[in-house]
Length: 407
Image (cartoon, rainbow, N blue to C red; front, side, top):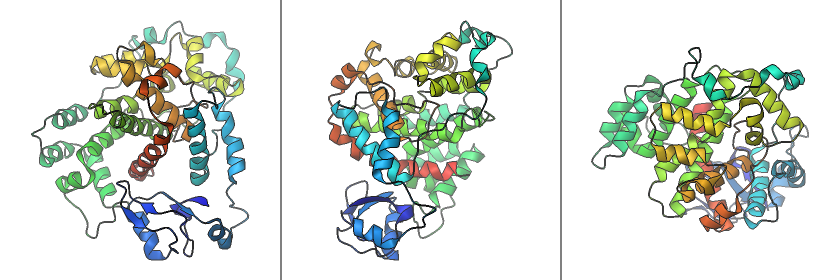
């Protein structure tokens, strides 16, 4: 049996397991020999990977210049990413297993070292007593979150609001409108007729996803022009979006009603790092090189050059943006969840970040899976067996973001 991404599916392959949509409805049965119409069905319903028989894969043959590494090779490449976690822990053991399968199916390899020179590592003048003091200086102007994000959140929190109300706000942003219509008319949704109204697009995509898309677009615009050698902003957004999606699903699994609050916390959990990359690029370069070459955890090394951590900067920034204190706290404590006022919610962001890093769903600059707080895991009281369903659902939803990020 082999797990194959739908981009690599070909006719004549034979399914070794049933193919179902995210709601568990049967799309194609086990044993089905695939034809073009079956592949179209999978694309229409957003299926990203399927299990096929090993024989059907081998019969297809492959280009020797484009062969994917086998599972053993991927496992060997993935293991160093899990250096700072206990692979004997049931949760980490299951995450590692799923990460190997996910990385194999999606062709994800471990991040390479930054391409810039490591000479900056020993320069004493790069050290900052506390980056927050520098942010207070006149020359560093913090970005502002566009008003549309707050308008959307107000509408979403109103139980009497309609898709038309949301559409009126979306229409104020040409970039959001264009992205929305592009996504809804893509093959991801497989609609037979073209959608050309915002209200119809909102109905199809869903109000929660519209708010998510707005935050992603705003984040991309607010922090543009970061040197790609320091951070691929699209990869950062993918990691952030994945963390938000996983946090939302973990919250739903725990019957926590504030799923959107936790989605936003997951989406913005590393926002402080973008401030570092944008306004302090030389320190960022030294920090990234140090962590890669010396195999150190990024958030533990930040204090050395910056005088504080990215979570300190996140709290400072979110305070400037007048975000709710509960959101600040969930983000600030995501590496130390048991110190939070509400450790359960902070633990959800903590685990979501670990899962997104383990899977290699984008990156915020961290090369390793951050250490897991065992008390936080015990508090969550989750079964590792839930990971697979959460990962599959998150991957399905992130496909819509991929369409936007490919621009």
